[in-house]
Length: 150
Image (cartoon, rainbow, N blue to C red):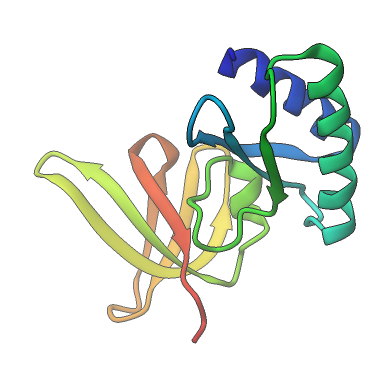
């Protein structure tokens, strides 16, 4: 099975549904792989969209045969445990708390704060403890996750 072919097939189905593939994880044995697809959209993703995408992706896989034999397919939203990858994802979380790992001259360091804004270059955070605003370029971000409010 070629992961590139599988990704393209899944991306095509997601695009038709107005969604984006955030991540594709293929794990398990070659005889019965498990395929986890994480999708999102600018206006959010619903369980109905995930169910429809799951059916569409299964049909596409079965017709184009990038996987031979049995497999398990799971389609879901990325949730807050998955890192943000695309600038449009950040915009959905303005006002929420983020944990950002960023590359610096001394290595990877972290900042957390309330996401104030997103522009073409990066994000502006209000650091909770210091009360100051910082701008972080997308090029510096190693990983960013939404912090759970609880």
